[in-house]
Length: 350
Ligand SMILES: Cc1cc2nc3c(=O)[nH]c(=O)nc-3n(C[C@H](O)[C@H](O)[C@H](O)COP(=O)(O)O)c2cc1C
Image (cartoon, rainbow, N blue to C red):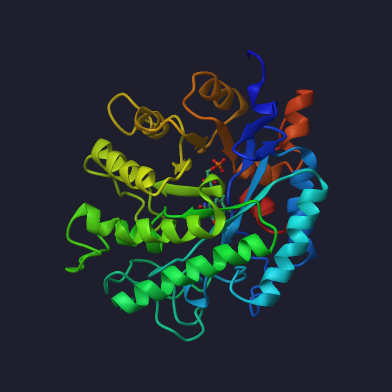
């Protein structure tokens, strides 16, 4: 292996990362289920990774409103007490010289009123998802079709959550537009059969994402806003884009129009081809000169190679960072890594 670029410090806009290792956003479900506040256990979990030398931590998905909640123990950024609880976390991360970005996550139709304060799930169209709600184990409910008023209301909720993220001391915000959740439900013709300006054409379907991004950039700044997008959908494992090149081009056109600078294309397997000769990240790189975060079953060697060849700038690790809170130090010392086991590593915050 050549020089370990992954472990070198790097400057991205105003952020000074201690390494090119990113902690991928991972839902853990340890926030207070009633208040959406985070506690000392969560503070210590992120602080440990910052101390280890992770360049930037992207938090677990955080709800911009109670209606965006899709399982138990998800934190929020829509009340003063939630903001206060996150402030302790960002301070702890900063004390260790780390950086932390809040991922904003609204699940749209992928929930049930038992989780959303009694409100029905919201979505672009009243199309029910197949399957059961995470941990609640009840079937997904038919969502309420969002009116244009509802759409504007939810965009304002994203804006408020982004403002609250800044107030709580976060270094930036990642908009979760991936994996079949609310924004992705607007983006896809499978879940969006609206006949107004938020549907019909690809431009119409992507309009909600565009407006959310505009609102977040206004609060946080374009140099501190990341967007995550994907082909994969958590509730439709077999889903594939008909024409990935076209899809990627359409997404990137929007990102350029709203002046986004950092993309986080999400795939389960970084090395898997999405077209006959390109992986998802290679395809994005073809049309994107800005910053790209790699992710998806990455190992140190693959991440290094992808950084060296210029496909990605920084590399996100999910499960390896759950199994190894000292991931960066282990890689530095050439020590073996613990392999991830959900039965062990999801049970508690280590
Ligand atoms: C326990 C767990 C929770 C996750 N929660 C989220 C989430 O809240 N938001 C998100 O965008 N991705 C989430 N993901 C996906 C990860 O961010 C990442 O893309 C995925 O784990 C692939 O990276 P890895 O192979 O290094 O684990 C989650 C993954 C895991 C394992």
